[in-house]
Image (tube, rainbow, N blue to C red; front, side, top):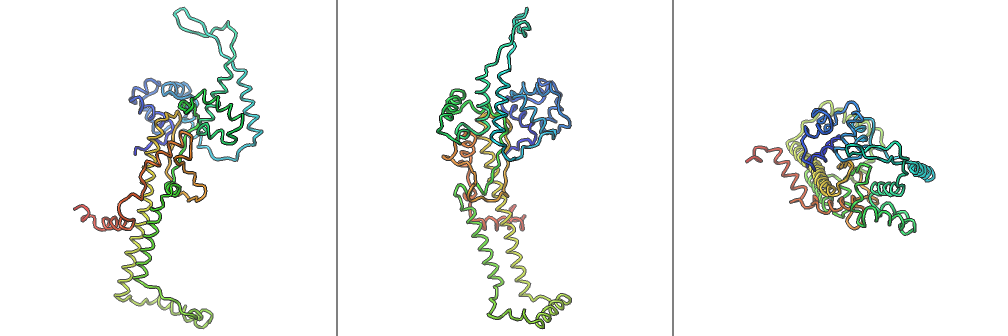
Length: 384
């Protein structure tokens, strides 16, 4: 899978180039910067914030809101870090702020324009300003919040059958379509997706991969016990630990052995070598398990990227694979087909369903680990 740039400006540029097949030189010329500067933007090598004129020009050329391009530049220069999860503010505080913003919007105006002598348009300084279409402003704000929340069902989940929810749903359906086809262009927040391969397998109910590795570990333990059987302790066999004399004799014997070790017998050498071979296989097995989860995660990321492309999201999309995430048996949070409705979650769920899981790999984990270890130990034989 092609790796998306870590730079947020780079992601916006790559998304544009993928759709328009634009060259770096041509795009740089249209923005009004040098090709070298554009390459630095793509690579996230910004040392200072670009000028407002350059950012506005980039926003116009890339077809993105100015605020989106500005946030990307602020992120790449280190002024804006990824949002951290904070305690939610009080309902009344948020309501007061929302009311203040909507009230401020009622005072916004549009300047009338007039024809120029050459047939163009210019602001008419003599005409009184017109009040904005406040209803359109509110509808667009609703659409943006809904897109950020993941869809109409998600944003109305608190009381989906209330009369308020019905009114808001009607407004949104009228604005973006019954199937939300026009919703996602209103999104303003980046899409940050964390894929947890082991959690996804658990939530899918595909436990064969985990069970197979548990079986492999049990088999290795059985082999170790077969090589060096454990000796059961007889009743009273540890009574000597309560006798100070015997304890002192034991420690003296340990010190003497450390100072003058008894050479191991050929049989002990063979046992040590056999146990070392089992441990090497165990290490390879554990590395193989991580590698298979990582490969599954990368396949998921590629599938999610492909499924999300159809939404034409106007914001950066970040997909991270976390193979070390702690398993949550109760609240895994994996989007599953039939359980989610928002287009982004549905795209992720569809990608998960179409991606083969590690349980479809040929052979058992132990067989795969043994084959890999054999190749590592005999590279010349593997090349034949």
